Image (tube, rainbow, N blue to C red):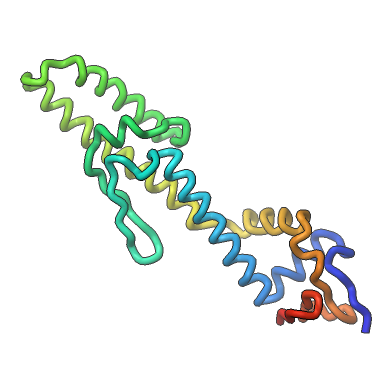
Amino acid sequence: MERKYLKEMELEEQVDIILNNNMLRSDFEELYYSYLMDVQADQGELMLGKNYPGIDIKDHYSSFFLVLIDWEKFFNNLDSDYLNSDGLKLYADIKNLYNEYINEDMYSEKFGELEIEIEDKCKELLSICENQLHEYEHYSEEDMIEELKYHIDNGDYENYYIIDNDKNVVYEDITKIYK
């Protein structure tokens, strides 16, 4: 019985073996999804501010949605560096309205109109932010394969091997068997 370690194989062959083994693939997909959820949380805090000021986060089964509770806190804590192009355009519009708003007499009719318009645009901007964050919940096969290659290059699978070129069963040292 001849052992052949994955680390001795070409990268594409290692990827093929891991992705065609149901248990290894499932373990890796779970690891990758967990990583993406961590990135999503980090990006949310960077974009929207620590503890999401002015926003309420509602859990919805395996996802979430965001509700605007204070447009001014939301807008003032938002880091526009993390917005996509649609978000940046809307952010610039809101910023112009906000500058007009803070220079307006708070007892004027225009002040109230500006506040309503800004709040509506902030709801729209929050929706864009939410959609950006939801993108982490879905990934392509290509993205997953690139991440798998990264893990292989870092030696995460160096103790995995097959016996007698049977690629359907992968062993990890002597402790685990993946079928």
